[in-house]
Amino acid sequence: MSRTVVVTGASAGVGRATAIAFAREGARVGLIARGEEGLEATVRDVEAAGGTALMLPCDVSDAAAVDAAAERVERELGSIDVWVNGAMTAVLAKTWDVTPEDFRRVTEVTYLGYVHGTLAALKRMRPRNAGVIVQVGSALAYRSIPLQASYCAAKFAIRGFTDSLRCELMHDKSAVRVTMVQLPGLNTPQFTSVRTTLTRQPRPVAPVFQPEVAAEAILFAAEHPRREVWVGGNTVTIILANHLVPWLADLFLAKTNIDAQQAPTPIDEQRPDYLYEPLPGDQGAHGIFDDEAKTRSVQLELARNRGAVVAGATALGAGVLAGLRARRR
Image (tube, rainbow, N blue to C red):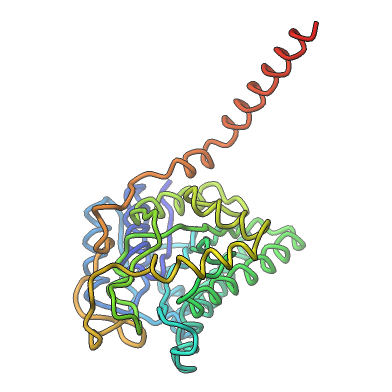
């Protein structure tokens, strides 16, 4: 049975890839983003993939506009089954080079945009006692890195907000589910659109994955709403290392990560960015790092098949133990 899905940040990057992935499943997809040219292109992609598209231009920092978009989705496409929060902005710069106004703007979009989307979804899902909310997160929701204080702080806030909400839904024995997908570095247009004080081209930290890998994980999370889904071996390493040796992570990131987020290519210091206004045209789903971006995550495959993995590991362990016992005898 086809589902009604809402995707925020749907005009480019992960949101664009996610909308197309749901469309391939025959979904009716409400598309929320600021840029109308990008949204029009996403509508074409969704319809070409076999889905039904509804274009909903709005800024997720405007709670009333997000709620009105949700109301229109239910009126024109049907009850919302899945809501995916993915809209984001960021500033790549050292903390003291980011203005208070820019910090506020990133927070309003990347954190409060998720709050507004979640509240709009809950308003409609809770009375029906059904639905899934997917928060598009990042390894940076657990481990901050240099040059991304505004973005990391927002992702930490999303995780805190989501954990509180999950407990409240459990307390009320609600069937509404909330899940968070923690992503690695991705090849999206973000790095040619982001506001920055850097003089070299911003880039995702390697290893880099295509946005379709993220979309695959989001689709899986919507169908199997676990507490969290981690994508990419590097994501697992970052999260676990931060739990075990955060001081070592500090030293490593201080030494390596500023260079790791810059390509050798210089950039025009006057180039436009997307922080306050959408860029004109269609930005697409992919960025400029196709040559190195991976199209598959082994770790995601293991997460999707964790039952088989656990069973195999258990069988292997039992076999090893049996072998050791036989040798002793």
